[in-house]
Figure 1: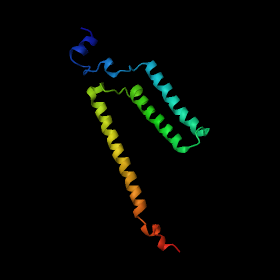
Figure 2 (figure 1 turned 180 degrees about the vertical axis):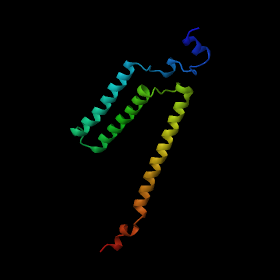
Figure 3 (figure 1 turned 30 degrees about the vertical axis):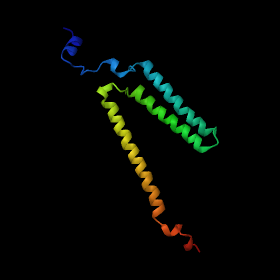
Length: 130
């Protein structure tokens, strides 16, 4: 019995088949991810440095969209995450992390907004102006 057969006979692979990861950890897969990551970094850099879009809110939306796409590229090509990897636990952990980040960011923005409007109400009252 060879070492490879012995590993599979005793369950040493813990149920991880290469097909579970969708994108194989190959040089081509890593190069595809690298090229996509570079392109998704160069485009926002070019947009900002050459002032391609005059309206800053439109530029911000485009940059944030490209950032979200780059996060997905990193998760697929470098972290090898998909709905099947690790029996779905990776995806569950990702959803939990996203929920925590959204709660933290929205709570922080809410607190800062209310602190700004409630900390110095006398400054907002026009009757106190000289």
